[in-house]
Amino acid sequence: MTLMEHLSRLHREIPSCREVVYGDLDSGTVLRAVGDSDLRQEDHDARLSEAVACLGPLPTRLFGHVFGVDASPETLSSATLAESGSTSVFLRPEGASGDVICVTVAPTTSVADVGAILQQTSLVDD
Image (cartoon, rainbow, N blue to C red; front, side):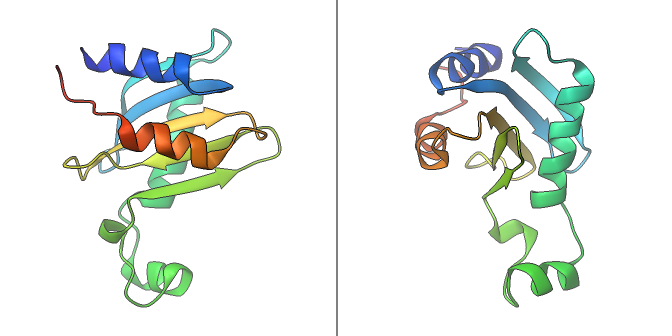
């Protein structure tokens, strides 16, 4: 299964999923994206920018203040950002430290359910 097939499957299987973005945290580049037809590239870019703000290479001092003295970007594997109209879940795939999967869902969707689906998903070609 190709990366796009994996992302398309996630988009179909995650309840109320609006978009799935796969990107590079270090460069801030969207590598692949699947989303509802009303979303544009700018929307995917904005979602990845949020992921970079949550999981990207931030100064250690800021991380220490926000997440605790021993925290660093490398120790965080996921983050959730809740807004009034949507919730975004960001996950670093295992073995791909610079990559991130961003999933945007309706605010009523269970974040735990989204996380469980993402944790069970391997993006490696079959």
